[in-house]
Image 1: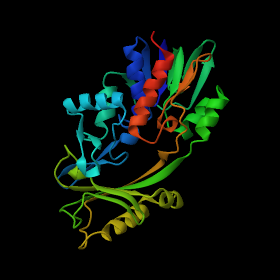
Image 2 (image 1 turned 45 degrees about the horizontal axis):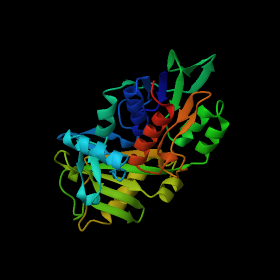
Image 3 (image 1 turned 180 degrees about the vertical axis):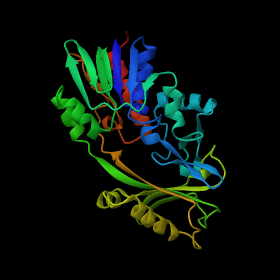
Image 4 (image 1 turned 30 degrees about the vertical axis):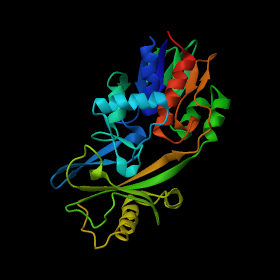
Length: 309
């Protein structure tokens, strides 16, 4: 079949890679400018060159045997590396978290900066609006649940209801760079005041020199301040980081705020969704568990249900 996948994060990429290997023709559409999704790596200009921040997912684990084997292959290709500071089974993409999705997507046909507002059936085929005038035999939705539901509801209300039942917690994130190491001995802070997570991004394997931090607010604080201006959010998170330092922080040379409206999901345990009569499906971590590994597995589960060409 000729299959369209809406969303080129880890779930969509995993599904596309498996379907393509089984003889299907797959085209992916993503509103982003490049690989990553919630595994994004953001670069910003600093006084001494660009500074990189993993401002979405911070690391991942590999507990499923198939995913562990895939991670081992990525590690051999220098796409991933272990990060013991986050745990004995913690891994990161190198030189940024987006490297994992990039490694898969480079072998796929992906249309970046292409937003899909609606999907529709035109006789026996599917079309995407306004993304493409091409016709497809099947369509897969690989977006966060909140974005999947509106695309699904007209075609499979039950599937859309499952997505609507999986709200994601938001997460405000601050990206900070300093011109000298700050006075915090550990590379990671967890559940400290309004900080759900703070990490010295520059301490991860394969990162460049310099002092770069990623701060992520707790879900409750993020929800309470969801519509606040980014500047005020960064101020609050910076102050929370300063409270953990043994001496005053220098002024940041880079400071950026990013609001993730759909961050950590409450999963449904469905694995993947597929309507064979209409040839429409959905994948994502919201169908398994709130982990990168789960998103990858969901994509493969749906490819298994669709089957070979």
